[in-house]
Length: 113
Length: 113
Picture 1: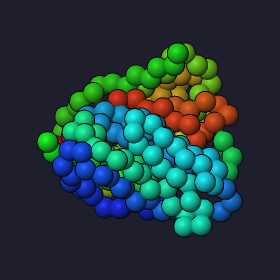
Picture 2 (picture 1 turned 180 degrees about the horizontal axis):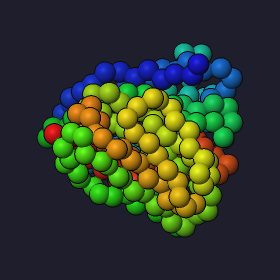
Picture 3 (picture 1 turned 90 degrees about the vertical axis):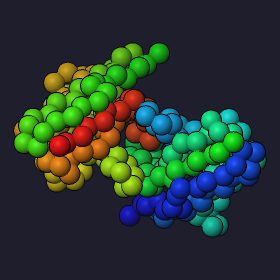
């Protein structure tokens, strides 16, 4: 079945450092890929998404590219801020809009000034 | 625009006591509704989802139950809480025809003591 694997946390960085959070997936067909962010004490919010191979999702300085050849959707940001401290979830859905989302276990990011 | 509300935000309950968490969605009709649990260090687990009034699917066997008495109301319940029920519970909704586009509520912290 479909699954998502993301790197263990926490990831600890200084402000303005480069961020990469790895996410790989297993799926049949052509899944859609998502990154959600959960700020402390809040629910999850959609950060970005990509629906087909080689698409790049981007939002708030974060980017992720849908790589079918490596089955990956790594999240990157060139310069993190303290306000980016949160838990980041990679997620996958099947080829159809009616397919359910499958979430990874989440990666906590801590950014220090 | 659509909004989702869940309450209470924080709950401390003794072992063996009942539970009721409520969630309502505004600004849309016939949404898909979800209950997720986020236990410490264990990521996001889908507990229940509903595609219509009275239609509930359970993803994992457990001590909890869900009900959907109205189109935009979703309730998570337990008759007798266990210590292992502690966690962060998230209600979410998605449009009828797009189950991979999910919007989350702000969550409810449950501590069973």
